[in-house]
Image (tube, rainbow, N blue to C red; front, side):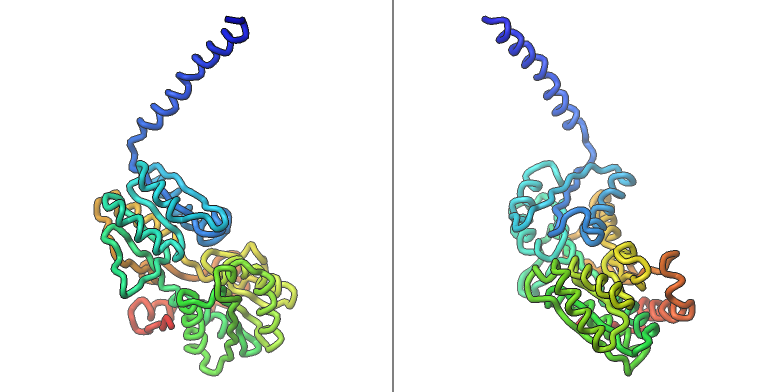
Length: 336
């Protein structure tokens, strides 16, 4: 055997223990294993996905769990990602976004010993939710009601706007709440509504968002609320260009256009994710539908050091009064 071959042989021998040790260390981790599959956009979207990740990260730190995630690419097979995780050590698996609904149902039936949770699960009254699936939904209409009230109390033109992404029932909830809140405090308010499209592409078309916003601004809108994913970046651009206010969605979007974001309707996906992990660890995880509204801390609006100088205290006092009335059931917010 040549000298070079001998060196290669012993080098390979030395490498084998290092691989074995890694595997052994991994096997020693007996903490409960949680996994998550991201929605379109993945981590770094400063919104929906990041909020879900924050909930899992908090659970890792405070509840002593291990977790992994899969970030599907454009057009990736969500079912395959879920199936891959279910075939592994993970006992609780999250799918973020309504597009996971059918895939989670299918995989959950094949893996009855695993638990699944779907954020924004699309409930079909003709299809039962598998017993090992938690369908997580939010009362977006309640948070939207509050920012609608803020817009109606703050407008100087008596005209405000709404820009939706995909024209679909989930986004209709944002619209319905926004309109209801605005009209509750100002019955004569003029609300302009526009949607970017009828497919998933409508959530990632900033040019369309700007086009709709400029049209609404030309008709007098001086505050525009969007529920349109990254299409909303176009709404913010129009707000900067025309010196009006925009209202963000899902997470605090102040930094997307400082000085032009009046507030944001926040959807606390992190709260829902954390509480689901907590229930799973306690053994109290139950399949079925669970909704998070104002009462559960699932939705709300932003009022902090960044926008406190934009919104008068009298407006905040009124909105907090409305919030209390919704929680107590004295105001029923429509979702359609």
